[in-house]
Image (spheres, rainbow, N blue to C red):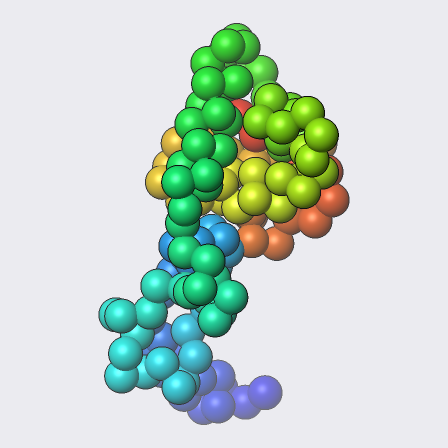
Length: 134
């Protein structure tokens, strides 16, 4: 790539990424949202329909309660939260717990880790742990 093309590409500024109010994933700027970027709150129609319910707030509270019950350096697994909320259908709560954890990361309260290292919540795949922000 020549310098002129690189300069042109980097000189066009796009607004900073946002976080979805429902799932906590990163919303990347799109050209079609150019005029309404300030109003964009959700990453998809599904998240817009789901919004954040009272049960989502309960999951966030349960994450904080379980973290408070452990030492400041300890972590919890999303399955710990799901099992504390429901004995039978805890597997169905796994994704809602991960969404709640991502929202808490966006609020600056917790961190999501994999193998002891902090990871980007939007791109984390596989087993995760949740801990207080350090």
